[in-house]
Length: 291
Image (cartoon, rainbow, N blue to C red):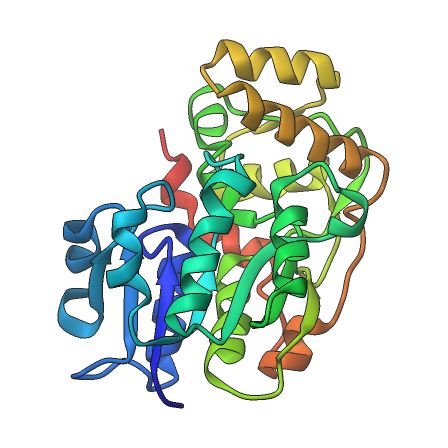
């Protein structure tokens, strides 16, 4: 592989794991071909030291584009969740990437995106399909790590899982499995213009999820099943931005309607190993919910 690999969102859950996975494949070394981009360079250096090129990158600041994209051939694209203006903020960055010589984009998308045309990811996929750049879409189910980030406080402080999906099942995936697929698509041929539906190995009801968390933590974690309106209003009251709360409610509506139950073998087919099970994830992240 020639050229540089750019990883956006480098200090986030997925971006950091992508860099780690590239490292485990021998892509990280002195004179690294990995460029790690995020808002705060100091956090990148704190996490990865000198193993990556650290660069400041902000989709909303065009002055950061040149340093980020120079010499890059392959790019891992992660849409910051707070950015909903795809046309005004994300697409100009992709225009700049193309002009700078980026040839291939691996984009973190959503499972069932074909039916979720209201979410920003859909517009990004549309742009990439029409662009001269090749692409790989990682269409992922819900992240297991949502529970130690978005839902961390409610689990740790209120001993509850507050999700409006009834008894519908969700094939959640560990971000470490997403990163393993991303690293392969970024560094190996054969993945251009392909979309992969990535899920865990099983689809669980949230009642089962709460039960596993209870067993792992040694205390009762209850599954609360609010109405969609109560879920939405509660998150607004907790300070979640309006659009983000709306997107969350929309995604959970799709889940309630059975659209997150799909289980695929894509992770195993691409990486050669089975996906991480929820029990393993819960044990690995137990400290996140400790009182």
